[in-house]
Image (cartoon, rainbow, N blue to C red):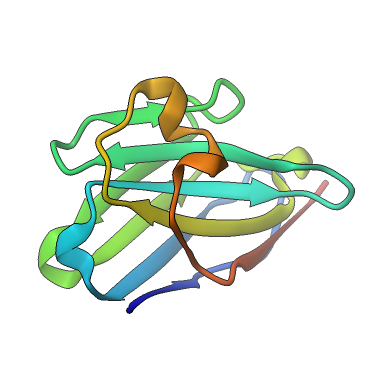
Length: 126
């Protein structure tokens, strides 16, 4: 069984920063790709950033230059450092994992991922 547990969400003013964490447990040795997704009210789930076991990262255009994805394999933890937050970043943020190596397009597609966390709310006020 795989479990992904996100934390670090909260409320922040525009221009501020937050760091999300996702602790994985269970069959983590199966993971190759991990990603962060978000879903704003009334919208579909959007891929934000992804990272492979080889360390290669992928970002959506909307967050490139502001968000940084990283992983600490010793701690089985995925991070998302979010800087210069904007009101349009308000959403529930989800951590996801899969066993497959992905192309850049696949890495930001929610259908490509097998395991998901429950999400953490990020609210940015202007």
